[in-house]
Amino acid sequence: MKRTTRRRLYAVLRFAVLGVWLLIVAFPMYWVVATSFKPDHEWFAWPPVYWTKTPTLENYLTVWTGLSRVYRTQEALSMQKPWLALQHSLTIALTATALSVALGTLLAYGVSRYRLLSDTRMFNLLMLRMIPPIVVAAPLTLYYAALNLLDSVTGLVIVYVIITLPYSVWMTKSFIDEIPLEVEQAAAILGASRWRTIWEVTVPLARSGVVATFMFVLILTWSEYLLALILTKTEVVTLPVQLAKYEGSSEGRVYGRQAALAVGITIPLVVIGCLIRKHLVRGFSFGMVKR
Image 1 (tube, helix red, strand yellow):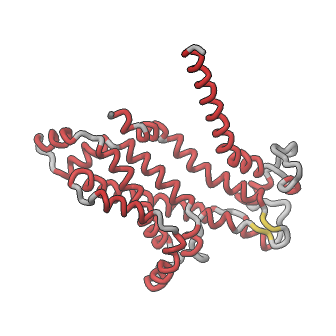
Image 2 (image 1 turned 90 degrees about the vertical axis):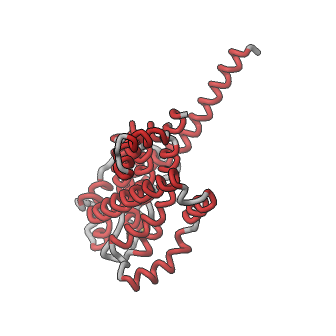
Image 3 (image 1 turned 45 degrees about the vertical axis):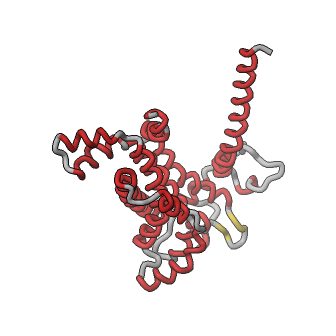
């Protein structure tokens, strides 16, 4: 077999594997979107209904507007108008992400330039994130009860900053490491202070990496469920917790309503990702380009 033929066969095989992988990854998302447009009797139909012939907006109307033609009872109220949960999720996720990335960038700069933490301590910092959230949930509940932080936005912001800070430090450090030290030395020779050098030289050069880190941490905080469920009760509710409440007393889980809310939860992340896609591509390929 000729070398050119082998290369073509390898390319075809590679695209075939990537195509299969894409189908496996994309199918759950497709199924959620398809279920959100199905009428009730097709949620559990056999054989499965991959795309309904009678699409309906009933699930979206029930969840987002409360204009349901099916649910007229009190139990439907818990399924409708999750706007308060959306407001809480936006406030908590954006605040926690901004604080985590800001603190993580400063700490990463210190580690990169001044070796504030050794490699072992940096590894230990990342290992803290590997601890299952359920392990820290019980002691956190006791501390939060004593500090009156249970069921509060501030309490969730604090815990999200703590659990995402290791990711922020590790990701931004790799981008700062790629910036030549000579650039900062040139700024110092021209009379710039250390803080001015960081904010006007280092951070703009690592901007794409910081944006990529922001997006990654935002996804983590936006989709976190367990700690939000344990540390909140009635005053504060996030969208993942709201999603779990979609269950009728007579018919069990209402998957169509859950799918409609899940689509709504995902749209903000998709929109943000599209708006900053240039920074994401540059950020994830930053180290490769520099080399």
